[in-house]
Each structure stands twice: as C-alpha cells, then as structure tokens.
Length: 132
Image (tube, rainbow, N blue to C red; front, side, top):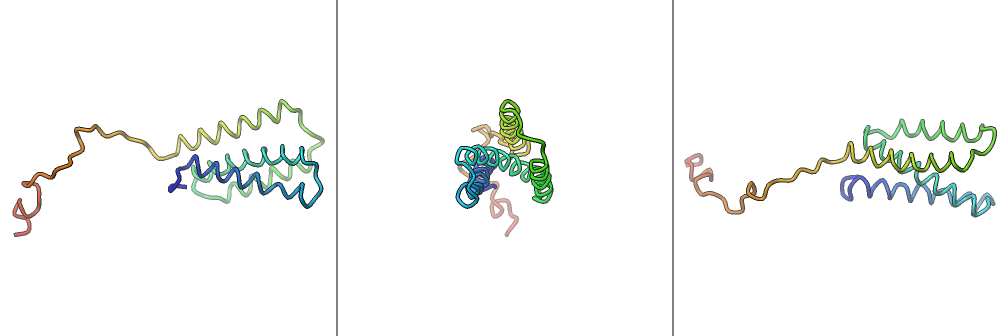
C-alpha cells in the first residue's frame, strides 16, 4: 500500500472489490439496480477490509470476516431496512478512514532551519581525521 499511500490503495481495493460483483448481473441475471447497490456495499466492505489488512498486517482475518458476512447474508430472514444499509455504508467508510489514519504513516514536519543544504567541511570524515 505504500507506493500510492494507504487511502488510495484502499480505494483501489474498494473499486476492484465492488467491480468484482458485477458478475451477478452479467452471468447470474440479477437486476441491474440490485447489482449496483451490491457493488457499492461490496466496495465499502472491501475498503474496510483493506484498511484492516493495513492495520493488522494479515489478510486471513478478513477472509474469515468475509465468509461470516456471506454466511449471515445468505441465512438472513429477509432484507434489511434502507436506513440500516445506509448506516452500514457510513460505518464502513468512517471505520476504514479511521483505521488508515490511525495506523497510516506518520507525517512529521521538519523545520526548514533544521535542513542543511551545504555540508560543513569540518564534519566530513576526512576533515576530522577519521580517514587519514
């Protein structure tokens, strides 16, 4: 996640994870509107899983969480109310961002005066007699 940063990497995972669920419309005949909502849900879930992976350093707990999530969705008594789904979406986005900011790279600012551009000749090893 480091070359592009943790938030961008998690967003990329979210896009890929969500896009992976378009197959339900293309191959299984699910209605397009249902599939788009599932892609949003899966994308936000993928964002949170990527953030958890970044925070704890392992992908395996997210595999278990994903399996449990699928299990409980398949065995649920029916669809959840829209307000509940919206709150789950907000939770995934907020928790994922919190994790990435909490466990992301620390940004420290260095005062401009502390950065030297010209080396002091007395601090060179050969100037101090270390090499001679």
